[in-house]
Amino acid sequence: MKKGSLKRIGTLALVFVLSALIVTSSFVVYAGDSYYNATQTIISKATGTLINHDSATYKFKITGDSEVWVDFDSNTIGDYRIEVQDSDGYIEYEDSSYGSSFFDFELSSGNYTLTITEDSSYDDNYDDIDGGELNYSFSMKRSYHKTIKTTKAKLNRKKVKICRFNSFYLYGSYSPSNSTQSGSWKSSNKKVATVSSSGYVYAKNLGTTTITYKHGSKKATCKVIVNHDTLEMGKGKSNNLKKLVKYAKGYKKAKWSSSSSKVSVSKKGKIKAKKHGQATITAKIKGTKYKVKVYSYDKKKLKKEAKKLLKSLLVVPSSLKVGTIMYTDFRHCKIYYSGKNVYGTRVYMCRMFYYSYGTLYTYRVF
Image (cartoon, rainbow, N blue to C red; front, side, top):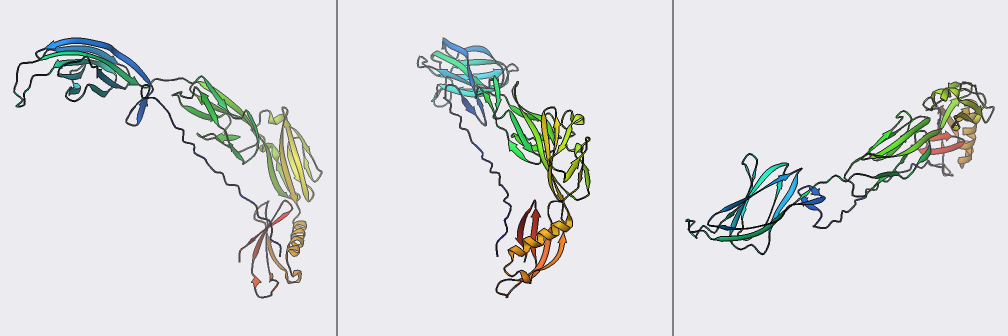
């Protein structure tokens, strides 16, 4: 017994690409789950001398959340303590020089004061003693998130023709590659085709739409023409294809034609299945052709053809007993039958066949 052909269902594999960001420590400073892509010097170099617990203050301003660091160089001699206060006098950060000459902390927008105090004022018993002398030299910098604007947006395709109920991916790119702005997708006619946040386009109805990829203020577009469809209908039945192309601009002035007399079409897009067979109905709208392949079937002829194809598949045609033929939809019919196999040892209680577009597809259910 020959096995019938089975329709293959394509599997869409989604590949997730993880892009690695390679940076230098002098440009990007990581802080928690965020990163800063720009640096700024707040105080280039400050020097001074402090004696006996004296202090020196430096005022500075921060715009936007920042990672701030104070770096004392090798010219600094003596013990010291630093303290950072906001404009309300709240201490945001404090530390001493014991074991460190580099201090780093996070600050949000606001006005601040950095105070440096000579700190050689404690003995081992934490009793006050005469202070010492501090010769200091330091610089202050910050890392912050700087907006890098997109200068160009691009799509991998500019025009796509697709069948109804099919789908595809559009891939957007932008420059510069380190732009910090975000991207978005939009369809000008969601009734024709929709687009997801990842560029997945799904065709819903015949017509034309424009898919726009926007990154920052820059845009790129792709024209999507949904121009093919299929329809199955019994002999003598009618339908109005004008409804299928109503989302195409200018559809009311469409010029209709049929490739075969088996299916007729009127000037207003009304079709009628006249004979067993198929025909391509075309609607020409402003230079664009929208096509619908119509399969017209006669139930008696379909049953006869199905029986003939069934018998050709059986080793012992005489054992064939065709039962009920059910039409699950316009596209398929189920034919139930019983019979013996070549050895005569098993009865095939039920085998399901799908007759579609002149091809018989089979599926065992016993």
